[in-house]
Image 1 (tube, rainbow, N blue to C red):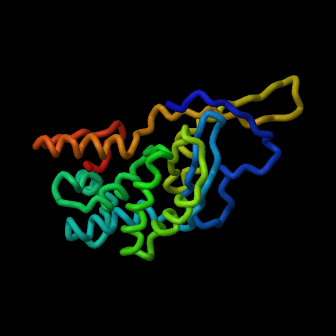
Image 2: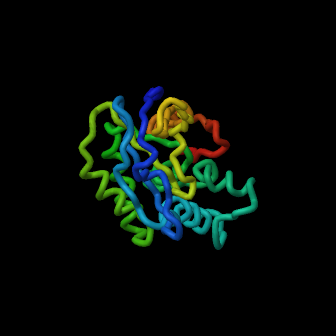
Image 3: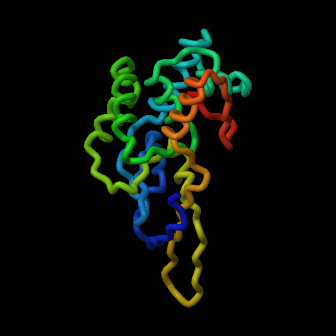
Length: 216
């Protein structure tokens, strides 16, 4: 697991973790490897990713007008729609990608691209086609993983743990971060495991640590 990577940044420099006032929310895609992390994609209007997918699942499979913002039980059913309904492989993978703290190994990026292309082709108002195009052109190390900050309203991605570094002997303050991926889940490990269980005629329900994970 990629964790324990520490780096520092001069606080006086511009940080891409800071959202400018009145700037449209974005979904941000990150690559993480043994050397640290980099932001590899920005997709304007974060509603076009996770919220769009949840609305679609709510409408198609639960006959709702929108994703229910207040009904937590119904939210869980939508996030786990594969338990109750027969979703396509593309729908299952895309739905899983909207889950908090999900990661994808770079070796699995072809499978992700295929699903995003299929879903995006049917849903041009989503950002899935844009993501697929960007993912197709990425050149990363074999050790890299990809993960999302679903909306930069969160200001910084879940895997960055900020450390205060106020050295009284130094006039320069520095931002210090610790990369911790221990909370993340591998999308295709979950997908393949649950499909193997279904092939064995089992009906497994494996909820992840965040209380929501599409059963795929």
